[in-house]
Length: 255
Image (cartoon, rainbow, N blue to C red; front, top):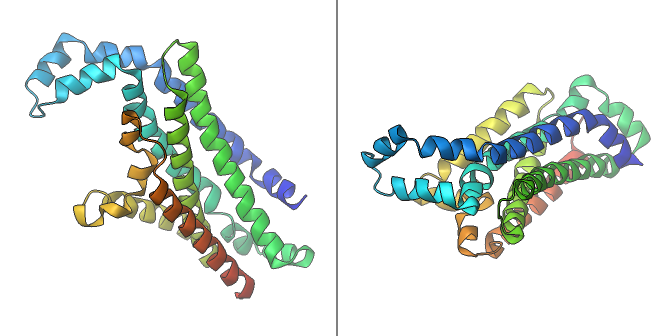
């Protein structure tokens, strides 16, 4: 019942994010032929022939002829991951800051204990994130099948699971930012700064182990690899640690 009330609170955001995610997935599949046509144009071939990147032509050929590679490069390794960060921000930044800013948190405390408030809010967000991520993934797969493109279900499933787990960590980080501020702008900006920091850290050899987005769109899946077990366990452990630590802070903090 408590989670139902939370779902009612965020239902507009849930619907909008579902539409954006599924719409983007459908668009990427539908634009495949258009993109391939551009890549095969004489002007583009001439440009790639003179490109400083030696593998440019072979990569463009793979993009044109291998739908699994197209799927990775244009969706699961790119747009899907970028949208996942948006999903995490949209569902996380107002979780606690909105209640504290409008002082409605005192009404909640009058009806529920702090564990009930915390668990209903966080778990509702978890369900929302999972729903949107899987909707985008299955929307892509269904559209691909309708268009008669071949995409192994296992690839789609592995990418979806890892991207969803990574997004849950981003969401959990975002809810903690929401907890420590009394207005909604600061956690929103902090989320963006943290996500940019995570992305930038993956560009350098010394900090590449922090490359969460690389885990979420792992290219090894194209070679037949499954879910990366060790990073998955680490990320889930981090989610659990933040979940517990955040609850303890919420339990004892002065609202």
